[in-house]
Image (cartoon, rainbow, N blue to C red; front, side, top):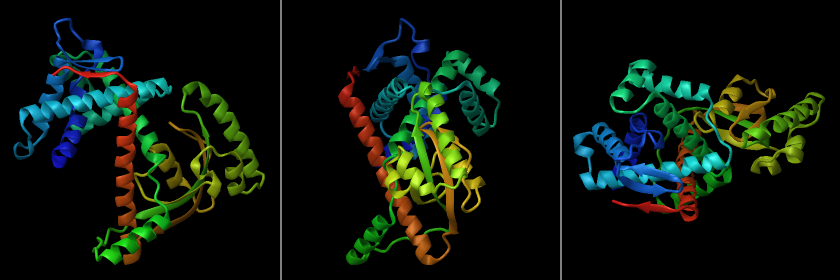
Length: 321
């Protein structure tokens, strides 16, 4: 069952471009579920289930009832997450939507115009496809917020996990070499777009203080609104794919000791200092990095589950199948 769940989740990602939400609801549609202020129709469920079915190898397909039940659950979850994002003022820009559609087209070895044409054949308008794509971006931003705030792994946690494994006689994987970064940052939150201008003004004042010679760690303790503030903004060691793209891109451009320009992400405005880099090349470093990634994945899954639980507890959900 767990394997089906993970595989279906991947299949639903592919199905997102074949499924539209309320923009294309027709009066003849039956209602499959109500999630907060969203209505999920039978037509939407049929489309998403068909796409998921096509994406799964025959040997991995669950029963039709199980597949439809899981697909509907995912559609309900996505609707609740999107609504939460909109309540928080999280948006997807036209440029972000264009980029997501371009990436989807590239993965399918086609063009964006062909995506629109194929969607039209399936009864999904251009506007509905763009709306669905934008909502997918919002949902991912909400998920990243939940995960990144809780999925950091300290060196102490790795030490404890290594000790437990040794005590219990568990053989740990050797791991692969990977370039890692250590950085500290100052965050001024601006989760809603209308707060971004004020947050940018604050982060630029802090940047000027850093340029004037103020210690970055002291500035982080004084101003940062992230949980890392007490540690002088230190984020520990991390590899690629851990931080949000804007943050990671900025880190990669820095030299050791250098401070970035203000960087905007879905969390707000950051000022970042790269403190060190390393190649996790020794057997111990590889093993520690593999363990860090494992613990991080566990924390990410727990954070995602907690987010969904909170959303379900605070919203009206009715499944009519």
